[in-house]
Length: 133
Image (cartoon, rainbow, N blue to C red):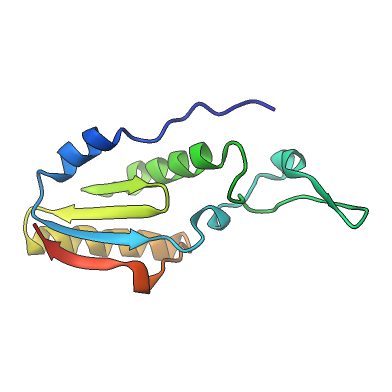
């Protein structure tokens, strides 16, 4: 198996970027890794045995070796592909920022629209909306 060296963002760098904004929301992605499908050719690497049967995961499970790297890369690619502004993913949380309430609302709306397009689910109870600095 090939190890994936894609790294998480440096927290201090991300903090410095986020500090430029005044309004923030945090979206908690529900069972985040499980929302990503595993390519059929890679499923063999997730094999496990139970009761004499061999099974493979169809979605990225928590605890798999490359799970963090795969998830972070997918989130970063989503932000680039959909041109999301002031959007900072880290593990299963995404912070959406704005310079003011109107800027924040536009960035948040674009993220929520993209999440809906990609069928990303989030936990409303763990989300924090439009908190000023």
